[in-house]
Length: 80
Image (cartoon, rainbow, N blue to C red; front, side, top):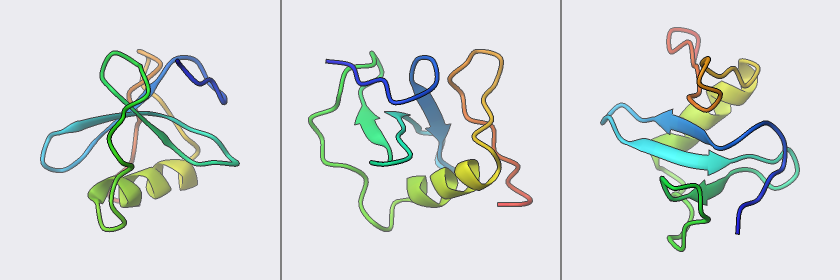
C-alpha cells in the first residue's frame, strides 16, 4: 500500500554516510519510511538520534525543495 499525503511520488534523503532513505511526508503525521520500491517499510521508523531527523528538519525549514527528478530532497547543508 502506498500513502500519498502531498507531493508527487516518494522523497529520498541521503545521509552523510551515503545511504538514501525513502519516505513520504505529512504535515500532520511526519515521514513514513518506505522501501526503495515505494512500498511502506516494515522496519521501525528511524531512531531518535538517526541523522535522518536533522536532515529532514532542515529540508522542511528550507521549503521542502526537490531536484528535477521530483523525489531527491535538496538541502543547503551550509544553512542546515
